[in-house]
Length: 208
Ligand SMILES: C[S@@+](CC[C@H](N)C(=O)[O-])C[C@H]1O[C@@H](n2cnc3c(N)ncnc32)[C@H](O)[C@@H]1O
Image (cartoon, rainbow, N blue to C red; front, top):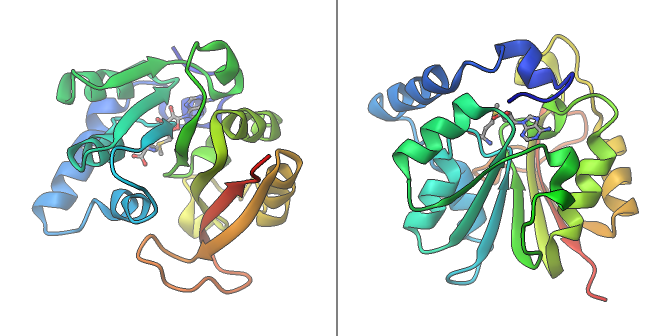
């Protein structure tokens, strides 16, 4: 299963799960810290929090968060990626589905945190981004967090041009009731400066 016109499917042909997992396994073997995203999210969470990993891919982040005691649900449209997640963490919840139809996937709302890491937002099908942000917000409890990491230039994206600007993204968030709480340049918490090539953003759903 791949998304219609989704940029990730165009790039990979929907067959890249094993290769993707091998790349991260090699990085881990070489001593690179592959758990930066999970550590960043864990620092924002209370124990046993509910996490929605949107565009979870091979589940590398959810699996780590689950090891840390959180209750994670991963959603991805690429069955080759999800096959790796299911093989490596068979007891976790993995849902094959399109984030543009998140509200139809039968997930229980009330998540403490929704994560879209690894350029998920820029890799969505063109024109679906605002609907995805709206549906992610709808999955959060009041006060819940949307955490995203996205490239803003070609050096930080697997695409020739950045399809999404931070201003557009912040607008979609605002329309969905999400307020920007923190923004960094890296998952390690380096400060973000205007014009930077990568942004890690934490938006918060207004309490009703
Ligand atoms: C670069 S991978 C990142 C995977 C994972 N978040 C990580 O950081 O390792 C981007 C993922 O977004 C997923 N994706 C893109 N568009 C999607 C959509 N409309 N619905 C669900 N997943 C989507 C792709 O299938 C892919 O697994």
